[in-house]
Every structure is written in C-alpha cells, then in structure tokens.
Amino acid sequence: DIQMTQSPSSLSASVGDRVTITCRASQSISSYLNWYQHKPGTAPKLLIYAASSLQSGVPSRFSGSGSGTDFTLTISSLQPEDFAAYYCQQSYSTPMSTFGQGTKLEIK
Amino acid sequence: EVQLVESGGGLVQPGGSLRLSCAASGFTFSNYDMHWVRQSTGKGLEWVSTIGIAGDTYYPGSVKGRFTISRENAKNSLYLQMNSLRAGDTAMYYCVRRAHYYGSGSYYYYMDVWGKGTTVTVSS
Image 1 (cartoon, chains in turn cyan, green):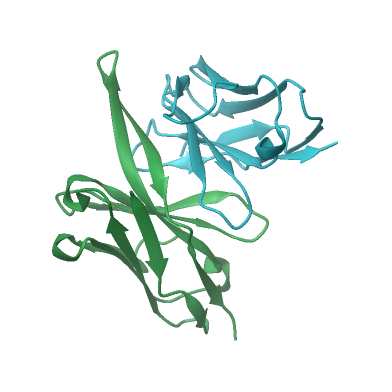
Image 2 (tube, one colour):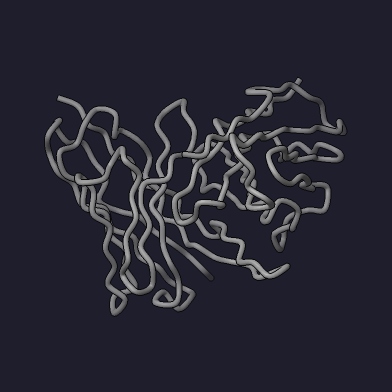
C-alpha cells in the first residue's frame, strides 16, 4: 500500500501569512495527488487535483506543486475562512486510495 | 445543485449490521463511479469502498468481506451494507462522487462532491 505522510500535523498561523503544507508518498505517484480542505461539521472540499490543478471555484491563493514523491499545498495569504484541516490523497492506485493523516491549521 | 445526502447511521452493537444510503441529485448518477469514505473522531480520512458504473466494487483490507457497496441507478442511490461491525468502524461516513480529468495522456481521478455524512457508532 502507498503511505502518505503530511507535515506538519498542526500549524499555527496568522491572517495574511503564507503557509506551506507538505505531503510525501512512500513511492512515486507521478502527479496523482489531490488536496482537500475539511472544516468540522461540513463536507470535505476538493481544492487541488492532479497535484497542481485548481478546482473550479477555489480561490487562487491556493496552489499545489510537486511530482513523484514530494508535494506541497501553499496558501499565499491566509484568510479567516482558511482555518481548517487539510488532507492530501493519492489516486495513483485508484480506485484504491489513501489519505495523509491531515494538517490542522489553527489561528495564532 | 449537485448534492449527496447520506442517511441510515446510528448506534449498533459490536457484531451488528447497518445499511447506509446516499441519495444523489443534480447530476446523472449512473455516469459516475462512487465512493464511501469515513473519518473516525480525531483521525483522518479513510477510503472505505468504491463502485464503478459497471457495478465493479473495491474495498481496503480493513472492511473487505464485511462491507458491501451497491447502487441503484433508477433511484439515484448508493448503499453501504455493513456487517460484523467493530468498535473501530465508529466514524462519520461520507458518500463521495468520483470524477476525473484527462491531461498529458493520463486520467487523473479525484473526489469532487461530498455529502455531509452520517454517523455510525459501534458500542455496547
């Protein structure tokens, strides 16, 4: 099975900060990597697919990069509504899939 | 509006069974593969099962042989039959649409629409 490891597990930041979350795969997954945002009590939301493609309707302050085993999600200027948990997901072995353990982004 | 609404969650004893349902609307349900994904309290997201448009099914080892995913296209509905439930199955269960993008000679799959979830608690 492909393991996905995110870092950090939690992160404190302020509105306006630039934030980067990292996701590492246990083997090369090319660009088969997606990012999701999840707020408590709501449905998870797709942000980025195919490592760097922005989902329709997602603000341009979100961006994704990487290929192979190392990937990043960047929020260029944090907004109050961005405080949430973020998950990466590999779709290389689709339909079987694995997620990272998540990164909880909190207000400093 | 594209929407997925789960139902059927509840409290069940260890070893018991439960059937979850998901009602889809706002899109042509029969044209999409569908997933179930769960999240235990304080933990991350875990893929539970997938059903293709042709009825092919897929499971991780943690639920294989205990859970069965099915669909009824005429009713725009997805189901998850869960048997031999364990405490470790306690989680919020999400119904999810599988979508894809074709680029650079490859299909890239992702989960583009999620329901709000239904809670399953396995406890005596």
